[in-house]
Length: 596
Image (spheres, one colour):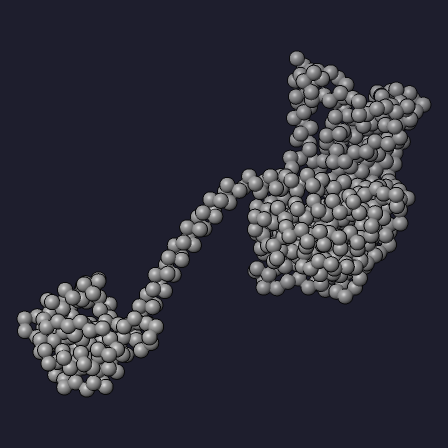
């Protein structure tokens, strides 16, 4: 027996004192002994002290051992006490009867001390193990109950924190303003940018920004796509902190090279102790010089970006190349490397998080390999139904098609802005170098109101044909916007002068672009009254320009107000109300007001 364990208690029940004495002598050195000479007393003692084992004589006057055993086994307080019968009976039928009423073993008279100790020890060891398992079972039940209580408390806490998550998301949107869809580069080129980001929970760990910096060295556009580890509530908070720190580093050290900026960001995060030791994030960062069109890039444990030039597709950077680094927040004092490419017109870039390539994991138990991703892109570019512009398939169409095809092959539903049945957040950010030079041009030189009306009708029909070729929705409100722009140019710009012309140019890239130029003196387009204000709603001025501003996806005034460029997206998010519906509502409102 172990000295560390308390002695187990044995109750001996026999009507013959000599038998009790012999069993006591045999067992008292190792066990605590209690005794009884009759059945009713034995039951009372068992209920009182709950012994670890009972040695029970069968043949006793009054209540025999079988009846004592039945009553003990019928009581929830004593049913688990093992009972060894003491008997001089060796017939098999009597042994079977003893097992039927609940005994675990027999000891026959006359007693053999060695056999008694062996059988008692065996049953008490079994009892100890059963008791231990029972305690573990009780603890397990308590742990399960506690876990359920904790889960309910967590659910309640999360409900209370929904507002905090929403506030954190608003903070992140303030830190990372909506990126400009078009940014001027050199030599008439522009940088187009668009993104899709769909979290798999209320808020995930993906975030990005596109920001233009101006310094003594010139202008550059900075791109950053990040993927925080985990998907818990704190992800959105770490996202906000990360981008706040990144923007702070850019504000103070934006003129430094990309390697220095990312190395400094890594140090700031590692040494701030804001992140837990297991928190980290991957990121893909780049900067495009507006003058030279050189893009410098640095991956921090992030999937490579897709670089498309014509029919050539590359994943950059590949493992071991310049620009491939470890994730951020793993270790301070690291020097990050960068790679570079000189971009040219028509080049396309697609940044993405690993939620895209890991989307098939849940249902297909596989990831999309690099060669499979390149093959998929090659198929989209060469065989996609997406219409080609002068620079091939627009990168926004490529981005949409990638997401669509990967979702279908993964048997997942991923639909911006919020539907995502996969097990990870998915973010895609696409860029393309476009030329602002227009594909089509017409010069209008109307002599009167009838001429300008006929010219606008003919122009709309011509553009509608082009829009059909490029598969634009017929719900794009370009007709109303174009009519207002041309009328404003002719009436307010040229003052209806028949010697002056209105030039209309248009092109198709990632968006549909219309440019209207007059030969007037220009005007301050920012000073016109807002017709939606209560004091201006009955005034005739400003309504046309309000329609242009409000229902174009992008506008740009140049040449002192003499040139207006308007752009329209091919695709709108499902949550967005089609612009044409807003136009009809507003026109109906104004018609009611003017009629009154």
